[in-house]
Length: 352
Image (tube, rainbow, N blue to C red; front, top):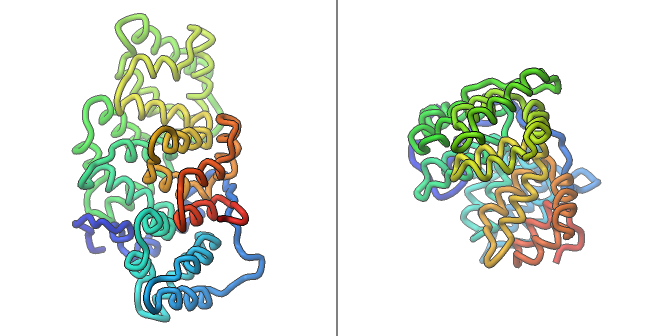
């Protein structure tokens, strides 16, 4: 496979078109609970008809953006993939290139990301976050620390094949200190993903963190890295409860006080996603819309990447936390076709 050695500003250009033929289908990548609010037509529409309608939307002066959104925002991942293939068959041109040429701003970023597979999105986010013109290690950290061991194995294989360089190499080259050590350990360790736990090991971990941590001068980073990179999500959830019961302090709060920077963010992401990934992403969305200005890159990334995974649960968690519907929050922070697209994949009706 040809190596993609140049980083392009267009999201789709981070990936070779043949990627989906080499790696397993979407269904095998995300094993999480698939609960979304995506609304698709009750009457099946052929991918050829969709491709034809999209081609018409691009013809003439300007683009019929409303038509593009009305189609793509209401097709699931499999249907979008069929449309991509049909468009190229009919017109010998990459639909994503056409979208990149015809759309602009935040809407362009959102739709191009929407047209990628989950695996492609993770590769794009990691590559940009680690080696982009303006590196964003927080994004790379979120991707690595919110994924399971099985997902990370596929990500590592695809990253190496796509960019001709191991993910571990880029992580090592573009992170530092305890953050680097944790990220590399988390990538290289295969963690158990089942529900069973060893209660004795849980208690020993709690004692180890306290013995070599808070009782001295801050939590011992080596102990934290070992436990957080090697233990299952179920183990960490039980450990959190055990730690609080034994020492009267939530592990989350101890991490917040005793660690800092990207290392703290990585630990917190691992722990929060062990407890409740949907709640974690609800909090990320809140931060993206809180205060002056909207962090649109974050808003797009979370809504698009979770829309077909667990968005219904995220919406429920958002309301529990902030007593406001996520759809209403997004509506108040966005405008125009960009708003219409995001609200559509969030499952809103009568979008205006």
